[in-house]
Image (cartoon, rainbow, N blue to C red):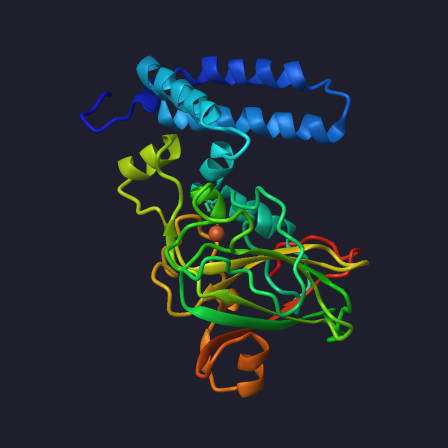
Length: 306
Ligand code: BEZ
Ligand code: FE
């Protein structure tokens, strides 16, 4: 019986849609590569289940196709709207979590994000990544280690961040020097690194494309809490893509891309250390964050137990 509250999906003839599903699955059943076969079968099963639950009108179906078309059209050499879509749906974070190394002591990973689009300039330990002075000066120190605590000499550290106003260099190209907020460092013989920067601000992800339209429809804000990005690497270890989040930043509890892990939130402290200040051309007191990064050995399996 039809009631005022029944959904469109309840009126679908199940035998027809089951038969359609079976035919489509059968069409992929002879895919020679086993992994491709499994992925295609899951894609068909889950997309059919989605369509059956939503039961779109033909106008809604067309709107969905047009939306994905706009997502593709928004992509360029400097913009990846599909990654942004994956980010706001939590799928980028899910991919990271599925592939996290299954070792308790390893530093948690988080999303890469779209702003790692240019190569970071090679810098020496102690250099500043801040080329414009927009923001509160800050020193970041740290050590890269193996899970047993052994330092990893010469570990590489690719670092990028926005300035104190929330802008990455690529968002202000022509206005700020390329490489502002970025640096490619090598840790010393003890696995230690140190550089000067500014405390990053929270900032909105790009909202001038179709992903912004979804956020607006859902009344979701576009902000990410303040963070510094790192990719750390060392021979024999898995690359670690992660962030350090600033402990008192707004939006730590509502990151637009769901990338906050408690273990990655760090206090940017006020320091009176005269030697550290002098080594980075600062007066005391100054802001300092210490970041220890623990990498997983290459052979570590991915797992979801953490
Ligand atoms: C970022 O942290 O750079 C970022 C991550 C996901 C979406 C937009 C920006
Ligand atoms: Fe970022």
